[in-house]
Length: 467
Image (cartoon, rainbow, N blue to C red; front, side, top):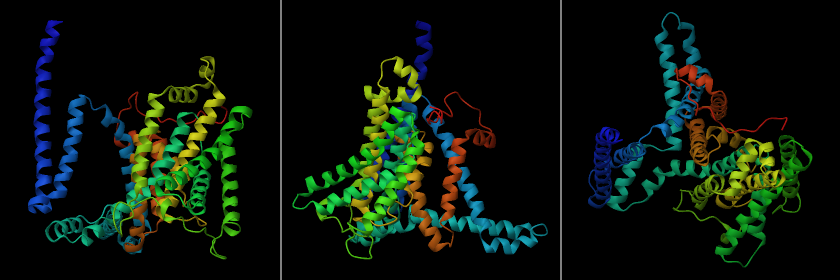
């Protein structure tokens, strides 16, 4: 035993030394980041130093944990996204008339064709990046104008793309959590789209119909109304699944259509603010999710709420008895029943919580962005969330990262369409390719020559049609 300890002591010493070195570097970078705004020097180095700090944080975590297992779990999703971007770029090139004009000379002089393909892909992804993250030069100049001259307009304008990405990621995160929680219970909640619009509508109704309340009561009440409506809407298929065996996929799809037609009738008749508009009245100011920054930034409190709810979902699933029962029922309902777990309760609970998350997603969108309800309110968030939950492997952290990715793609896609003239449907193609590669990880492994590990490929999904 003493020999083993003596063999390990040099490794422990080296690890402690590495930790001291990296902590020292991290503190140095933080000090520089603090000095730059105060001293108003080296401003162009601010963003690169932020990147260095993020990289040091990853290295510190890896050294402190003493394992690369966390990184290995990111390899397949990252390569799936990369592969989707490559295929999306090829789709962009195939829809570019400049590329087709150079094709007749492909075999004689391939250079112009390859250059045209590269230019087309570069223009598309440059517009995608600038529309979702922003122009780094504009950000640097905006920081300089703010810190040196006190002018906030340039930095607000430069930060608008990343603000839009985060705003668009909020309904993705919450809808993705809704689908992921259902997956953990072995249920496929394909009705998130319907629960989304029902939750958004009920939040809006409480937001404009209930008057005389302070914001500290009115806003939570409107959010809870959206969550409750979505939860009740989803609990119905959960109860039918538990009591009659009716498959939740069929029932939630049908509930989607009921929700859509109900919303259409309500917006054309009793809830229409003025004839011909097909929209409700705007919510009162006391029911609006507050924004963090002045115009033109739209980042609101919903983003913080989405992150807190993701943390709460993680705690519920992995740190509570109810969460353990829910996951056990999802993994093996017969074993769970033999162990004394109530299958009916867990099915209804899982679907109810899943629907509540979807309803919250609709509430954050209606109270934080639109401030009313109109026809076409959802824009496909509920259906995209299925791909998002798969990409995040039904884990709350993975869902948050996937939601930010999808929000980034949607925000960048708008600029890609307006500036580079690329169809917005290219983004849909990329998302579809992500689903394909995540659902069939063997394709990614074969393409990049990656050996399979026992931990890889454990994407939580439903048990199938026969359950």
